[in-house]
Amino acid sequence: MAKLTPSSSYSIALRLRLPNQPGALARVTQAIAEVGGSLSQIDLIHQSAAETVREICVDAVSSEHAQQIYAAVASLPNVKVERVVDRTFELHRGGKLQVVAKSPLESAADLAMAYTPGVGRVALEIAADPSAVYEYTIKGNCVGIVTDGSAVLGLGNIGPEAALPVMEGKAALFKRFADIDAFPLCLATQDVGEIVETVVRLAPGFGGFNLEDISAPRCFAIESQLKARLSLPVFHDDQHGTAIVVLAALLNALKVVKKNLDEVRIVLNGAGAAGIAVTQLLRRAGAAHIVVCDRQGILSRSRTDLTPEKAAIAVEKSGSLADALVGADVFIGVSVANALTPEMVEKMAPDPIVFALANPVPEIQPELVSDRVAVMATGRSDYPNQINNVLAFPGVFRGALDCRAKQINIEMCLAAAQAIANLIPPEDLDPQWIIPSVFDGRVVPQVAAAVIQAARQTGVAGIP
Image (cartoon, rainbow, N blue to C red):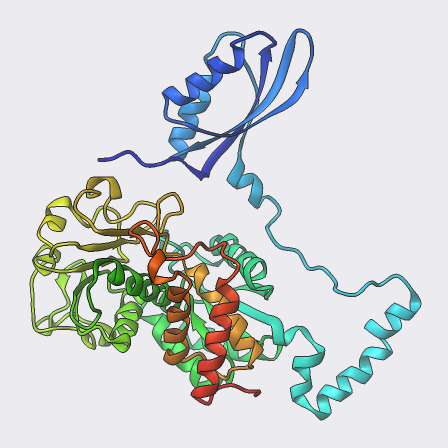
């Protein structure tokens, strides 16, 4: 198997005391390179005539690899490792969020306006006109991130406490990319009814809800019931966020290989929340030939083990993933590591498109099929064409909140996907560049504008 690329997600910081002599630092960097570590930063902390103290940051591919890097450096003569820190854990220490007041509270006058007695006037204004809550409180710019911890990343049912750092990260992304105040709501229940009731009762304080890391098929029922009971945007990012970015990337990838969405044969591996949502959105966008596979193979109408959601996208054909891929133009993986083999790719149509989105290890390592695949995308930041939900959900919610949308519908999702795709002009499209960077400052404004327009056209915008 091809080697994985070191990533900052497994980076360590080594505080080293070295002799102040030529070659001392070079011996350290050589030892790191020999065990496959990738240097990211070197800082000089202290220097004297006899010695130097440096902090060296190194990226690894796993926790075990990071330990190998530490051991290689610690074994060098005349090198003392004073401290080793896992940088990811250090970043999370104490949490990643805090509450900060927008207005100063430095005087009695400030208190009189921000709290009693002045706040009472504002409360009465909202009591008389409930819509004023959007103008005079955080509600209009606040999203609740709801999880039960049942399907956290690729880690499974690890519970609400373990889900909290992930939800904190999601909230940080909302703030960084769309200036939306989001807050984690990690619920100590996995009962559909209890989750729905909890969210409904929390609704007065939020402008919308982002459902996150809730396992299928319960996530479908939760989303459906919340949409029926709330006049607020409810968005399951694992479903619709993934679908939006996949569609955007596929629209541009098809332009690169000069194929049409309504003609290509698409095979999608993974029939959980993301896979079903991707299939539904691709169909609405015009894809006519989609075969979906799960662990048992093709979702065939002849199978008796399908959930209602899987049955709705089943086809007449039966067989394995390998069978489905014969002659296929597109592979989209939202499944597990190493599910796709080079032999399967060899049997695809000429100029195949492969989106291997399992994280951190994709369905197939890009290096294994670089000479066969026309366009490759993954969910990782260290390869070209990263398909990442952060391209979608900040802009979708920015638009939905700004027009006080009563829901997020499929037309808004289609508009968001097209807006993301349009950020790369056709003349600039390339196999290595079919999707904009998550740090492209145009993404959120363009997506938000498209979402607002679609909301107005479909009658779900709450304000003109």
